[in-house]
Length: 253
Image (cartoon, rainbow, N blue to C red):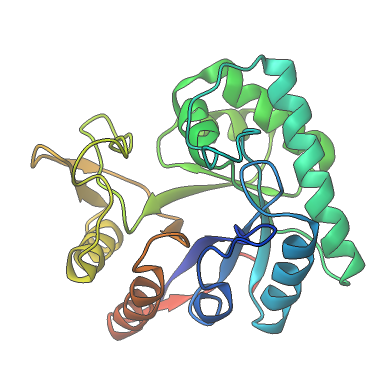
């Protein structure tokens, strides 16, 4: 039976602001990418989300982003390689401490938003991120966009890597994700999302914005927790994968 990791970006509430439906989504995914306080999240939310993930037997990963709470980490900000290295260590270290306090440990690290997309194309930035993760814990799995510089940098330094594909995003012909500023970039139709996921897993391809198909490697599938239909997507994709004979497991289980 084919297996796949199904992940979601969670723990993105902060202060008085609630984002997403983490408790419900965790029932359907195998790995959680938990915000570390820069683009979203706060110490209380990090603590609670780690506990929720443990309760649901969901693997835990750090989801570090740019220091941009107002922009939810989705605005590109020019940072140096040293700044990237430091912000990754700071955020991964924070979540690792919450995990240790809860009697568990991190499985992976997945950069968030603009940082993720910048590192997908910028080899120097990707190298700085990979080195930071390696220096914290060389056993951590680096999640990165399939075919990206981030995956290349992880492999080059000796990190285990997981090539990530997206259930709820439209792809460009070069394999990058369509900018959220463009119409159709975020999928809202669960049938389209399910069809895209099954195509990526069964055919190893994804249909891009211009109708062409490109090859993709899918080790883990992401569902954005802040998507308005995140819970519907998580539940229906989980069911569809199992119906197709595909088992859902984290890399730990």
